[in-house]
Length: 409
Image (cartoon, rainbow, N blue to C red; front, side, top):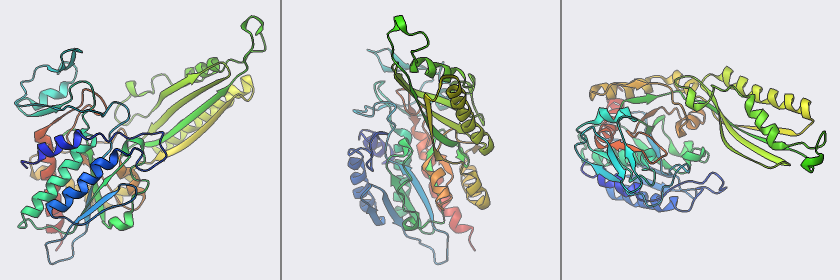
């Protein structure tokens, strides 16, 4: 456990930001820097069958130390960080014995992490927090998960008295841009089931996530001198504005929670002759999800009937709710729940308002619930993680390995 903090700090100071506009895998060359470092480290701690493929997917094995047939289980995390905020020159700050007051992240820029706004901070009074310096994200999503898995495997290697079956681990690139599982070799991984260590606060245990799609709307127009434009000009910006006005105004991320779905417009650009809107569609319920896609089609049809065929729509499904693949093997959730309770952790079982590699992997034949990694406020300068939550995550991994072996007679 003593290596957990320095290991995590080493990982987060290695820039691995992914790029949604790149066509390569990994999407950025710099992800290789951490990948190669991890391969060396996995060899050093004593794992076997350590491999890295041409797309930077890393896999390794901790062999079984029992003489009976035990399911092979896996643990998976991603190496990349979000393109939403800078991951370059991360300077983590370690706050020991947090006193429950404001944390000044950057004095010069007056950037403060305050419990007045982020109430969850008060849960961790007296603990050790790792924060940003206010100029970058931290990268706990998901380098905390990577550090926890490596540390748990090292602990099991050093404590052979803890009985377990064959354990497989994997680290993936490009999860933050929705491609983390695209080239994952499930057959090569060879696990009966796995867990992603990619959740947030301590206790989170998730086996359902959003159904997800992205939509690109292109609007064309006709530019005419504005002084002579009546009945001639078609302003693509105006049509784009009308499109947005027809979306449900309260069904957006800032007004939804729990099981509520949404539309999220995250990019818009335009001129008179061409405008483009990019948005994402999210809903846990499959029927509601399809209805959201139909609504976009209806809006496009309505605008084309009004103005002519000036609006086009392309919808692309991204991932689906893993619940339908996990529920038939629900004992894998129950094992994780039992592991947490045995360690004095209250499980927080709730749907993910997002997606993980596990959602795609579940549909690729590898049922894969999600377990907390411990961080808060991902993808931005207010990101932080309690060291004690990371330590508990390590303990949960170890306990799951132990329980899986002990429950097989």
